[in-house]
Image (cartoon, rainbow, N blue to C red; front, side, top):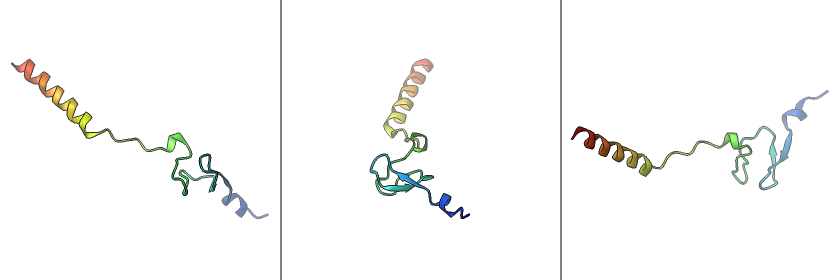
Length: 65
């Protein structure tokens, strides 16, 4: 028996229907992630972090006063 067929198992991309390997994390054609678990975490925008720091600084100045 030849087990090479198991290595080349393919399926259809749920988004663009192109043939992809079963163990693919991302479709090479449409660049969509196959599973929601594989999507990288989005970075927080810099303005949210700056706003939180400004609010903390304002509270600090109010308490120290």
